[in-house]
Amino acid sequence: QQPVQSPQAVILREGEDAVINCSSSKALYSVHWYRQKHGEAPIFLMILLKGGEQKGHDKISASFNEKKQQSSLYLTASQLSYSGTYFCGTDEAGGTSYGKLTFGQGTILTVHP
Amino acid sequence: NAGVTQTPKFQVLKTGQSMTLQCAQDMNHEYMSWYRQDPGMGLRLIHYSVGAGITDQGEVPNGYNVSRSTTEDFPLRLLSAAPSQTSVYFCASSYLGAGGYTFGSGTRLTVV
Image 1 (cartoon, rainbow over the protein chains, first blue to last red):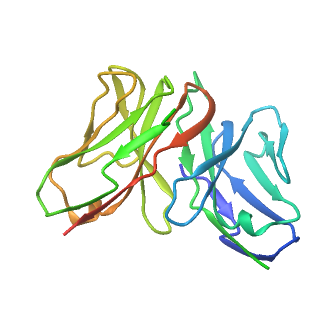
Image 2: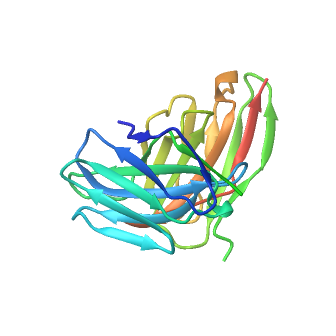
Image 3: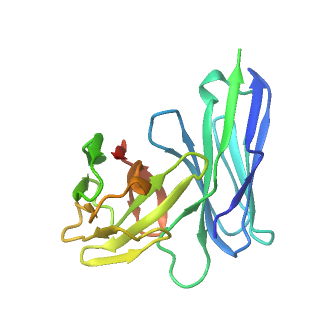
């Protein structure tokens, strides 16, 4: 089942912060986050495994609440280069996980000067 | 390292024609998959493979076939193209159960 992302779109000015949420109705083994720029392939940002860990990547970090099957992506002090569509991908728990991902519908992030 | 290589980048087919989209990776990844991307619908899984000789269906497998004879290659075959298969197709690979996907640059397919 496809995870649900919110919001669908975000408009920021450089330096502002944003949070993108990803919610699933299924128990999850892991959550991935990707960014895709127009006309390009998605690029991997980070993976969070069950255990409620939080990860960081420069000014981009994420958390994973496995009890609520939710993950959030935090973008702080946004830069123009952050513009793009962000996707979460979820890997359902149960048995051996081999990384088969179901992606959300995406969140379009636009950063203006 | 070339990563994940997809060919062709663009293709126009007539309804009823068949073709194969090629995907090759040089990272020795066990897991490979095909997704299609349509506006507003994110990435939907077509077929995937956890190793040579092993394939399985994803969310939208109808009209597509795959095979995995080697670790490196995972071609996607369209049996009889339909306008509903107009989309951007991405191939992705990863280590089993660990690490993120590496995506190919995509194939933009139009069926007229």
